[in-house]
Image (cartoon, rainbow, N blue to C red; front, top):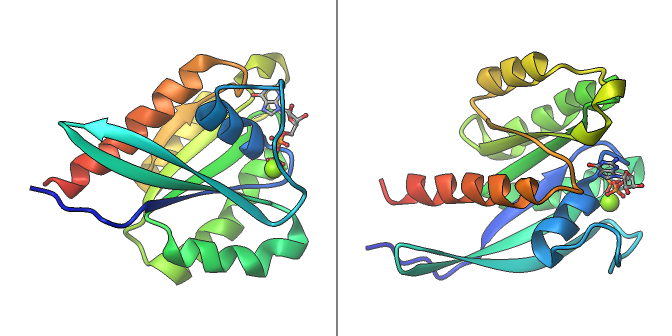
Length: 174
Ligand code: GDP
Ligand code: MG
């Protein structure tokens, strides 16, 4: 029997413009561009409830700005997180390389056992691909991360992301 009172904190990280907010909006509000409810600020969250084996799990999902000026701020959120979602843009090599910066911070704040989800976004723009699927997969293997290729325009994203959150729930029940 699992008795979780606290919200499970999930944090989206990655370079500016990779699509963190778009992925967040699609998953939480099921929209791509109809409305963008938020902000230019450093962080925003909403709650998503997942029922698994007749129990409710409340995920508190944070969309953190990748903007340089908020970086020190992001640490505060990372410290509290149970799940980290690292997003890169498959058409932009710099966004893949930037993940090293975030990983260093994650290692410092959470140690080596954080539950990581690596997301290669914008696969609808595959003709401009700079990071291959294989490179993404290899990196995920090294990180022991779940790996998702996504387009924030596509409903598959929400399904695959929720599957990854359920994989996390399964680790709690072990
Ligand atoms: P953030 O800075 O990481 O939050 O990135 P945004 O969510 O603001 O997205 C940056 C830009 O990329 C916006 O113009 C989005 O509409 C666009 N975008 C985000 N995800 C995708 C995607 O999967 N495919 C395409 N083609 N564009 C995307
Ligand atoms: Mg954003």
